[in-house]
Length: 116
Image (cartoon, helix red, strand yellow):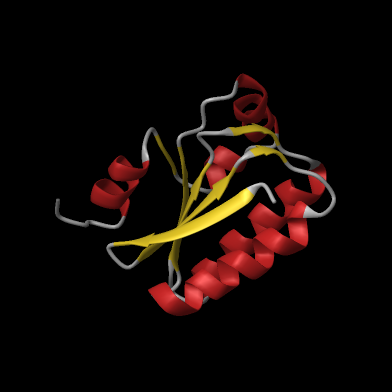
């Protein structure tokens, strides 16, 4: 499975690893919702090792952002290293919808205001 999770400073961090496919969408939604319950709806999507995002997963990211924000939480992306993923987010204007950060640590300190 190209997903992993952790909780750091009461913020859920979900990592997408490698390429996503038709099976990733549902697993991502379930994983984020599970972590959201444990973290007060605060999630970072870590894309450092993500090389490709399919349309279903793209749609899931948009839906999860809406879900988290409507529940009073915060949702952002970090570590977007792959040019194809970055171009996809630029073309779809996802960067105007979801905050992005260079690193998870930057997201923690600047977006979630976690002290180091």
